[in-house]
Length: 279
Image (cartoon, one colour):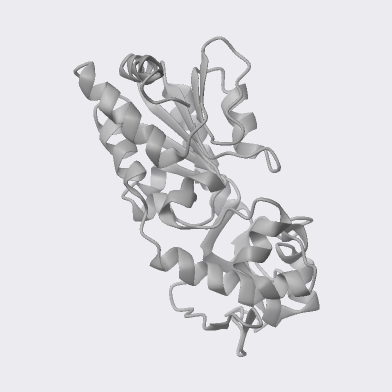
């Protein structure tokens, strides 16, 4: 994309946003790339971040799976424990603040629909009641069985992972109710034991916001096709869409705009255009 020749496209995005009542922010794994987070695109992406998983020939679908905790808890928790530590340490990029600044100027503000489990929208200052983490959160735990509906914060869990083996040394996190192994409160592949009531409460807030929204615009960031939850919501919402994606920016409706860029670069360009139109 030629930034100079496509300045008018950013102006078009800015005008659409300025005319809207609020932002429906739809975020996939690509949103975290500018914060230094891996998006695990394909097995090579996962294996670059976790070489021991390459040696074991484990794909993302196999390690992000409840069976991994039954088969090899140390390895499964090595993967998720390292991710938890990485998400805690990483700083949300400037694009999060740009979205907050735009939302603050719109009458209906913003609501976040995200498949990300990293908690970075909360970390960037978005209110809990305005976020729907459709796949759960790595910052919360549950029993692997589960023995009850108990979901608890992972705040007291301080994972130390040997990256040469991708293993978390015991003792592993345990359920405070029955003593069994704990796991992240995340929807995994082939997962029938995920406790979804926390995300269900968020969904109710999301549906209420949608029901009250008059003329929002969807700003979708880094949502891939392999797990298309976010893209499907964006397309089925019925609202105008700005799709920001360096690999898959294609849109199908005339009132949609596709930007083949990363999240931060696109948001900075849109912010500049908003200033140019006096927003």
